[in-house]
Image 1: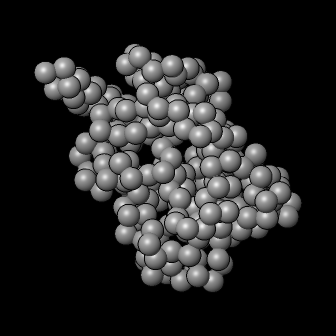
Image 2: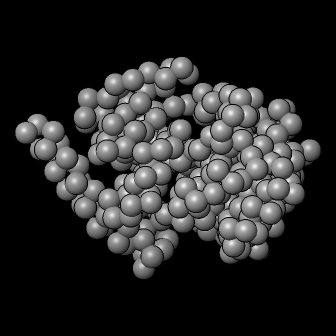
Length: 252
């Protein structure tokens, strides 16, 4: 077990390092990346779906091994970490949807420019407008998630964002970072999944009390059973199998 400089706990699960870190500590790390300007800081998140993708996709696994910060996004990951003996509580689970307002207030205070890539045009426009209404004066530009690498790199060159929020879905967003980290003009790239769709109201947002208690998956399954049944009924079994296998190998 390792403590980071911001007093967050680093967890080893499968072959990946996961951070139990608060949003305040995450903002501090982002400030460090921006001030340092030496290399692009990368931020990812881990839930059971991410772990499932990682055991099947080499790029996803590589991203998890290389990310500077990889925070706990799914409550089952917090439960797994606690079951493995790490001092992790339900409070160590967080998702961008829960603190995006605080994040953009922080960006306005620090005068950070943000480029949000991902989603369809309608969701992007609605989400960006909502954020700008909530946090007047924030420097935020959006683009849909259906352009080429070259177009996004050119956009970053023009906007010169401090932070890029990448909402292309797993593992596309993580693969994009691996390909373009050394080419993009910014200080931080942060994977945020489909958050813009939830902010825009294009996807039903589960009650936040359910997320904090580990039942967010149930609401999503009920809302979109055809799309979500495999993710919530099959993928966890595969992940648990690989965790059990890795634990057996470590003991032997």
